[in-house]
Length: 129
Image (cartoon, rainbow, N blue to C red; front, side):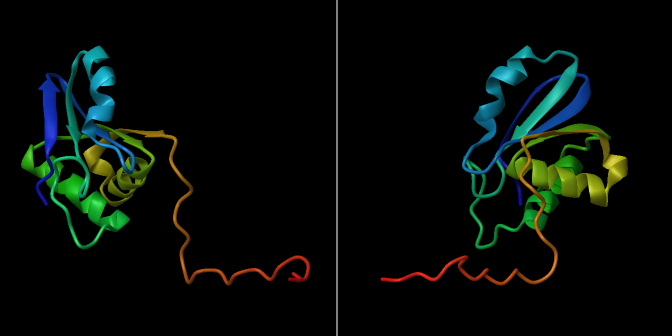
């Protein structure tokens, strides 16, 4: 999926991934303060100006970021992810550590659980109506 993005500056590549319900503009003030880097900030799928999709898995977000790195021919990047972007960044780094020079996670949620969902716990005390 081709992601909408801003691409500014020059130097080492840095990719900034926003959190859920946000967009690339969340990084604007930070981007203005950075020098010595080519800063790329995409809108993740279903956010901002990027296309919508019937599916929004964490794996799909990571695949989209890898496609972006390929499209822009970016070598090892400084990959910064906030919340949802942190999940995507982590998956990119796990799958392709050679593509990530540095990984920065800002306020990432707990990783998703592996395996089947846990059963709902029984109430601690009986409810009476």
